Image (cartoon, rainbow, N blue to C red; front, side, top):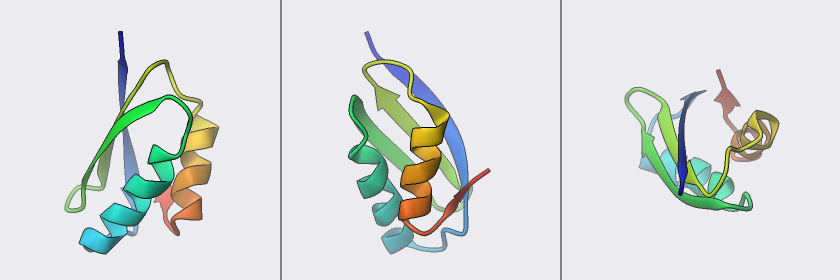
Length: 68
C-alpha cells in the first residue's frame, strides 16, 4: 500500500525547476513517484510509507526552493 502527500513549493518558474525538485525528492528512501505542477507549486509525492516533512523540506531546499 502506498501513501500520497501533496506539498506546496515556492520559487519554481519552469520545467527545469520542476525537474530539480523532482530529482531531489526522488532520492528520499521510499519515494515511488513525484509529480510537480509548476503553475501552482503543487508537488505530489507517492511513497511506500508516510514521509518525514523535514526530509521533504531538506530535499526541496537542496534543489534551491522552499517548502511552504
